[in-house]
Structure formats: C-alpha cells, structure tokens
Image (cartoon, rainbow, N blue to C red; front, side, top):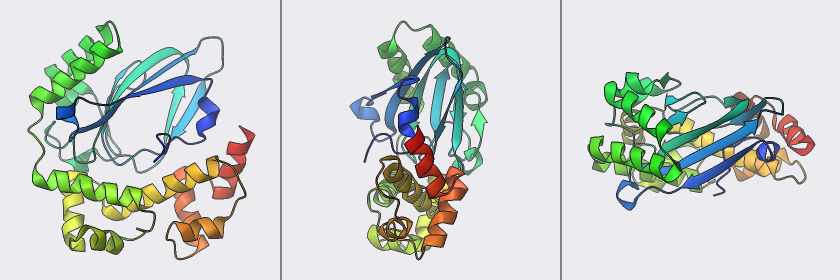
Length: 264
C-alpha cells in the first residue's frame, strides 16, 4: 500500500514540505510502525493547510507544530503550516500504544494530550531532549529508548489486534465486520471487544476508514471518475452509501475531491 494513503490531495504539498519515513529498531517493530519527519520553510510563502485522513492508531508528535499524544481521529486532520518548522512523529501500531501511558485507548479517541499529561515529568524531559538533539538520528534514538524502557511488551491480544487490523487494511473485499470476522477466524463480538480494549475504536469504523483512504488514493491518482465502479470495488452495497461515507470523513463528495486534486 502506498505510503501516502491517508494524505489528502497528496500532490498539493509537494513543494511546501518534505516528508521522510524511518523504520523502528527491530525489537520495537511490534509496537512502532514507523517514525515520520516533516519539515517546512514557508517564511516567504503563504501558510499551507495539509489535510490527512489518519490511520487508526496513536501518534506521538514532538516539534514545533502541535506536539503531544494524538489519539485515533474519527475525522480528517488539518495541519496549518506556516513560517519554518519541523516535527518528529512516532506512529504506533494500532494496539502498540496501549500500556505505554495509563490511559485506556478508548479515552484517547479524538483527543490530544501533552507529553506531560501522558507521561508526567518523563514526558516533559523527552520533549526537551528531542528538541535539543543535534539531528534526526539522535532524536529517533531518544524516542526509541523512551519506548523501550517504558513499554510493558505486547500481549497476545494486542498482537492479534494488529494482525486483524492489517487484514482489514490490505483486503478491499472486507466491507463489513462479518467479513473481517470470517477472515480472522474470530466471532464478531470478540473482535469488537478486542478493538475497544486494544485500539479504542470499533472494527466497523476501522474498515470504513481504510475503504475511504483507498478511494481517496485512487481519486487523487486521476483518471475517469467512476463512483459506481469504485463503490463496487470497495464492497459497498450501493453508490449512495459510498458517497455518504466518503463525504463524512473527507468533507467533500468523491466528485468534489477528484476535482480539487486535479486542480492542484
């Protein structure tokens, strides 16, 4: 799957900021998906708003723009970039953040905590150390050490939750929780309980988010707009349900979004 899934109107920001991705150390791979670093210098340019449709997980952000612990977002996220700045983000796996801070995953949905609120003095110290670090490699090493020394380790349910989320992500034929349960070999209620305990959001929402991300990526790629065909490919019963889902998450109809991508 393309790394820019989730970035809305992806080509609009190509000359406004840079995005680099870094894998975690091998021992942290079950917990952390990747590190992402964004830099921008718009001192001679107007402010730029980058929209994203985030993955169902927690991101810990340190830097000059909205630092903190960002829980799973049920709507799009708009980052207003201006002046000069940078951020280092740690994208956790769906169940990877659970246990790192004393906050149940369901209480992080649509919330941003400061590092102090999430980790008290240790979080504030991490924030200062990362900001003062000489380069990206040193910054990532500081975050890895913080996670490595505080994380209790992934339990079997957390590992299974990550696996089931990946099933929903990679298979566009999975359109309903029943489809996901059949593929995972687990009862629907078991998956619903697991997602609440480990991720904080229900499996129905996760499936819809992945299907809309896939639709947005296809529409941003250009080509002829075919809403009935796209709805069918992504497992929707009809075009109306697809358009309603898309607009509720992206804020625009598929046609409006495709037109905006083409214009930019």
